[in-house]
Image (cartoon, rainbow, N blue to C red; front, top):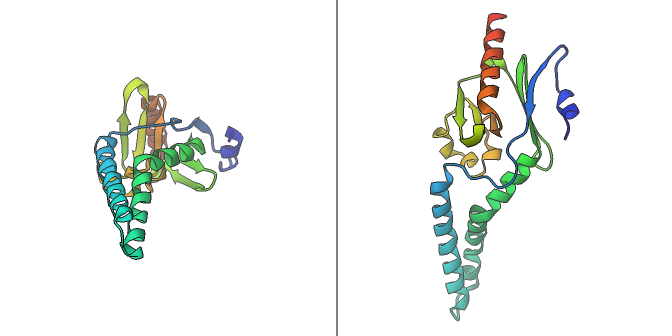
Length: 185
């Protein structure tokens, strides 16, 4: 993806203030301190169950098949979610214009969202180390525990600029642009 891709979504006269991409590769979140032990427990129990059923002679076929979905879910929770998250982030780009926040995701799980600055709900800034962080619109990170976004952050339904560099500068640009939009209403 190049900036020209996201420019094709601009409205006439719209000006780019910032563009970027989420952090690439393997990424842990604060939620992973709870999710990793849970996923290891889930996956370990599912493997224990399936191994026990498969090694017990005379176990009905239904019982042998019952554990397979739980093992697959365990594998996703332990490792697959990190692979999916990294793949989705590799195909995501962001733009902040003088009128909107644009989030574009290409590939198999393609998605596009554009939110007018003057209609943005609350803006939450989560700043991490080295100036990298996340800006979410609408819900706090605590409220996201109810959605799949906590397991695979890049697939959250809530609009967000996930794992961006210089997050505070982008946040300041966003707030200034939002105030300008509200003044010009």
